[in-house]
Length: 221
Image (cartoon, rainbow, N blue to C red; front, side, top):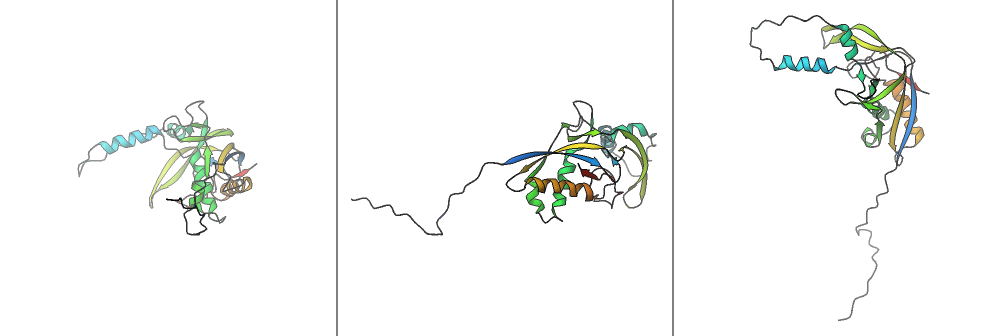
């Protein structure tokens, strides 16, 4: 039986081969400087979490008296509010705060937030000693103890001690991005928008719980 000739098809409905280009990741380093207010760290210390967990494990019967309150150690709370790197012992900022802030800054810029989640990442300088949270190192500025009141829910008020860096603090943020989705200027402008409108740490203008104090804002230098 003779072989039939091979005929190329031009049917537009015919399945096409998917072509995937190589990953085109680029990393850019930006120096940021606090402007407009201080940076206030709001880490929840490992010691406080363990104490809270121990209290939750104790079974309490209806009518049992409340345990007496222990004296507050404001210095310990101040130290516990900082993210301290496991290697080097330096203070830092949760790297996830920058990624989340840049993703949120995409919406008013007309960029899909879901798309940004798969194309923007922050390279850590180290990891927190207790929780292994990825950190961006604070390269300029020294912390000071800051005691102020804060609200617990709708009606409760508490006094907390936290670490505060004065305006002018600096850090280097390394952003890895998909260069097939974004160019360098877009990443730069997203970080700058985040610094002005969202910020990092306690009292930031982009806080989900309040309008913030205007703390944690920064510029890209």
